[in-house]
Image 1 (tube, rainbow over the protein chains, first blue to last red):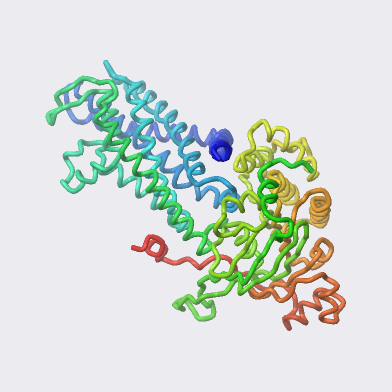
Image 2: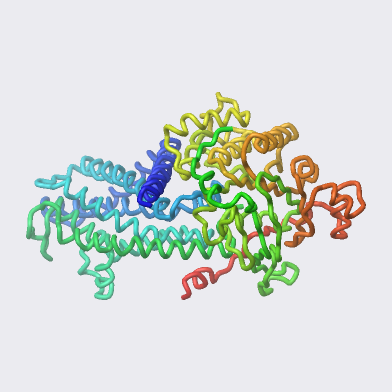
Length: 285
Length: 299
């Protein structure tokens, strides 16, 4: 019996690899489009980071504010990629017409969705790194003592919970071919609004601060800022210098990941059942 | 023809040899649709896509189901390939329940539909690799198997790495056949595989289906509205009309039953209507509803 499980697990891993492999093929085909998108993201991030220069602060505080904004913009871009890949996992296949072949294949939904998530994380991390260092170099940011390894590791850990929540949103195009993808982007925007993407969480109304506690982006942003620029008080004074990986932010991320993934899968399975009941599991047109 | 995915034969071997390949009993599927003649504010009503359909297919048999657009052919294929959930009745494939044992069914079944359906920017080889991974085929297996299967369907080797968007419909359909056979299905569902093809491509695809039957241990369910195709490929022919299976028997028995010379005449005798593609309605989905989210998540 155990060897049957091992064979099945191997098959599922091969299927998961198939999803990653397909995305590699597609990325190669759309490389020029990706480059254009990268340039657009860099320009967009610069418009955010330059806001710090208009604040009439001391050069050191401007540098800190720019770095904090850059971390926010980079995580926004990273999260955007994960949500785009997860939300569009159904939309792409519907558009290309392969959706029926994928959903009638003996691939578990866990392997299917995690294959997409794995590629999104890989692609998103590469993109986020290029974005961060390109903008930092362009405006000449100084990040003494920054622990990039810890920041990168924390982002990778945060990815697990992002994938879990992405799975929840990926069901939307399955049950509503026309409106689902847009609603996925709404979910991404709402998550970042409550997570302190460009501002401290404590400037928001109390009820939003409560929601921030269950958003993985809150801990990803806080942890990455702690690893790159340290932590600051309300007046902008340094409290702790850049740290090793901020464990206080890791545990919430792991707990959210453990909860979000099965909940996401349960929601997706329910959506898939609905789609099969109502004949929505089919190509566009 | 090579057997590339080892699991399917094992799964079939587990059930008795007398078990039919396909056994469908009182199968029912209903969608909610608006009566288009009743205007914009008409209420949606249940619309039977399949109504108490019963039939069986023996192992190795090729059965053709004829029907006009909207008759329920695609709904039947999608039910058997686990893409739809039934509203009543049952379907068994090699003894396995098509709606309860979906992971087993998915190993046994593959299909070719009217649209070739591929990632257009990817090549034939890349699309086949993508599909094969879902059935547990490793890169080293597909490196060997894909050129073999493409050669068998008559796909030119020098176009293997060309984007699908640059290939003709006929070429794309050959790749679709290769995709279906790559996973060694024991039940092959062909849903209008030659519709829209030029006459030469049509003949090539039909010839390939004959070869699959002759060389490969597959059962075939062919849904088509091409009567000549059905007559030349199938052992038995069924007629699906407005969701009801009117008969399923050898072509000579059909002609004898109605005392006619051709299947067109048999259709007329059975339904009182001419056989023509007069209905463009999409048969196999509910019409969109603004309450989708409430319906699925119970809000």
